[in-house]
Image 1 (cartoon, rainbow, N blue to C red):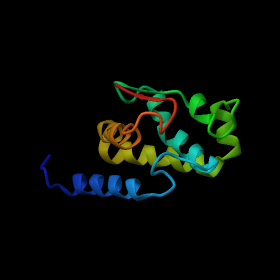
Image 2 (tube, rainbow, N blue to C red; image 1 turned 45 degrees about the vertical axis):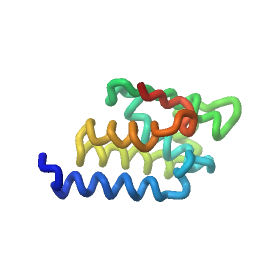
Image 3 (cartoon, rainbow, N blue to C red; image 1 turned 45 degrees about the horizontal axis):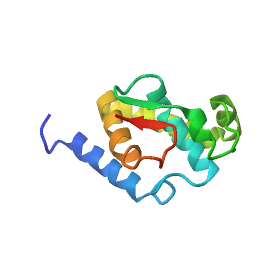
Length: 121
């Protein structure tokens, strides 16, 4: 793929928009943002990204200190969770698993601890 392809440019623009999103800059802080992040990162738990792992239960402690199973997060924050999950699917469909994993690695995994439960090696 060319260095200046429209698809690569779109990927870079998407990443820039995510980095500029106040709701996620510095990690999610509102429960609905956490649910959206869990939905987006759930594909990592499915093994899509080598060298990256995700435990949604750990991140759910940002919503409830006791933690919540994924199904409870999905039920309580249906719209936000679904939006995150659909965005991940769209990213995989557009850029393939490698594009999705690149975004996870460089956006979500840039600072240790911002997204609890996410481990980038």
